[in-house]
Length: 143
Image (cartoon, rainbow, N blue to C red; front, side, top):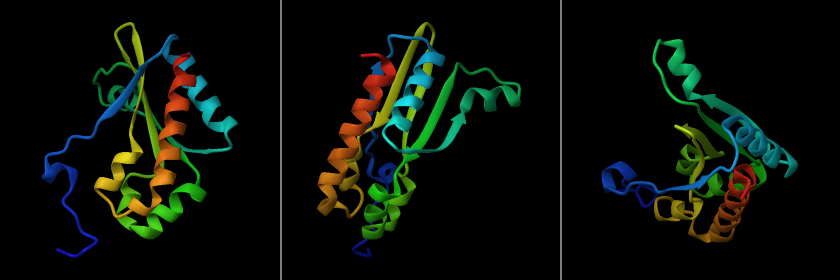
């Protein structure tokens, strides 16, 4: 195996952890708060993926579920320069979804990426990303 190669999470049996915060507000308010929180920090929203709209487009039902893809090339580029495979994980993303009357905000812990990719020397960046995601989730959830 090439030194830069490592087994995928699927082949290693490791299931990624999703950190979840329950929102104190409704779905639309939570999404709006998340987008405002991202933009107020000078980050760029690259995409919004509306899974529920995609399901409806093919005649299926799915409760509200949106992935927001965002970030800053200043943070992600050094990680990708060190190990290009981490580009599959970047930019950062957060999920907002409705489960009945409950609205949740979720995200993966970027510190875990150093176990899969050769980015251990960027531990401080991964820690900053984790703190950012936690703060964004808290702001979006109203907690």
